[in-house]
Amino acid sequence: MIASQLALVYGTYLIATASPGPSNMAIMATAMRDGRLPALALAAGVITGSLLWAVLTATGLSAVLAAYAQALFVIKIAGGFYLLYLAFRAGRSALKPASDFARTNTRRATPPYRALYRQGLLMHIGNPKAILSWIAIMSLGFREDAPAGMLPAIIGGCAILGIIVFGSYALLFSTASMIALYTRLRRWIESVLSAVFAVAGLKLLVW
Image (tube, rainbow, N blue to C red; front, side, top):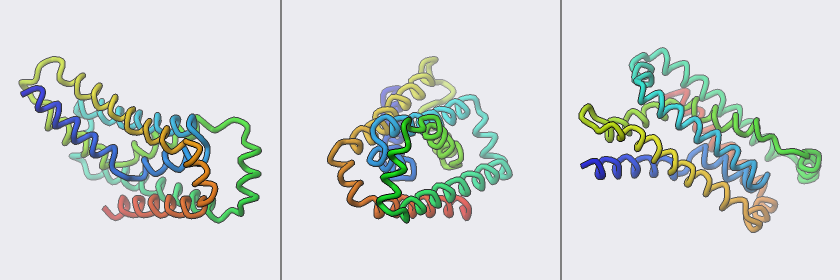
């Protein structure tokens, strides 16, 4: 029974993380634009945000947040506006001429790892769906009669899956062929990324 519960939890988390969304799109675009290490920094922020909600769920704090509409409202509004801000940034980047884009990349000696990590963290913390997803995951796998090692197995296993999924996006899309593709289709890719962020932000604001 323990194995089946863990399999259900891991399967749910894997589907949630691997399916296309703002975080995956951001990692893909960063990998093609800036390379492997910046994309991994962004992915690390996303994973940290996921684990933060996992710990809060395990301690019962996320259930308290979900029970109070005002708390979820504040998180939803902040997350929605942050995604709209990212949409604006991506849209502005799409409108840059190729010469300006190349000049910006040349001036950037050291990639902004901290800023990318913070972006990934804020994207996930500002998403109230992450709270509800982790509540659902915990309710699937963690019960009153669960053994002592069940909670660490859920959080640790999901952490490993998150590292594999988001890290794979960063590694796959930072290959030379993907970078060459981004160079040719930069405006289209940034435009799609801007649209994804805008739709996700507006959905949060009206949800």
